[in-house]
Image (cartoon, rainbow, N blue to C red; front, side):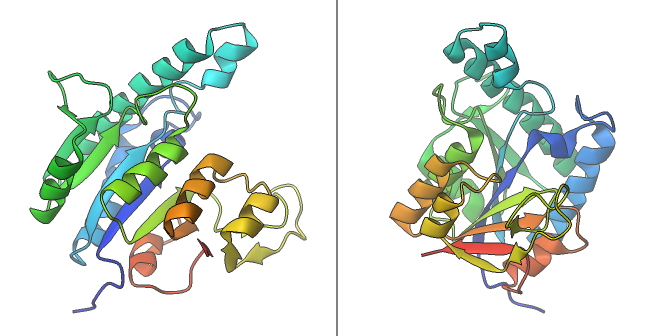
Length: 238
């Protein structure tokens, strides 16, 4: 059996990965597709923590355009991430993978409160831990929440799964001549203002030497290749 290079990873998924074809809402079919991809990684005996965004349900910046209070807009986004977490947990449970949903904002009727040592214990028991609610604080993105949780659970790698296969010199959808990087340093990524992850998250990873791998979630076997240590996407390190 193949042996994974990374034994514990944090997977950051944008809410759009769960969206219906129109880009909004939660599609049970998409949740099932993602669950299948995660199952393939679990089969390699890799421990997985998942942090979800909420772009398929709510984007705080849309509220800000209309004068909404920033903290209120951010709290709405945090609640939306919990809906996504529950949908993904259900899809995973239906294919036989035991999960635990934890949230930074307590809502004990539907999820556990996020407790670092409890999350680690779940991982050691072979459960997939799905964390909703961001950091529990406004003004911080779910990318930053992913970086923070990756450090707290002592992950070996933070995987940022997107719709593009890495970091480019320009938007590859707009510039066909854009070139993809196989590797970037944290400082170079910050200087480039890399769009796939915010500067706060990258800085936090840099300060704690947490490698970031940006890859295309929908590329066949991309997650398995990532945990095996194969060259895929863009690796951001010191």
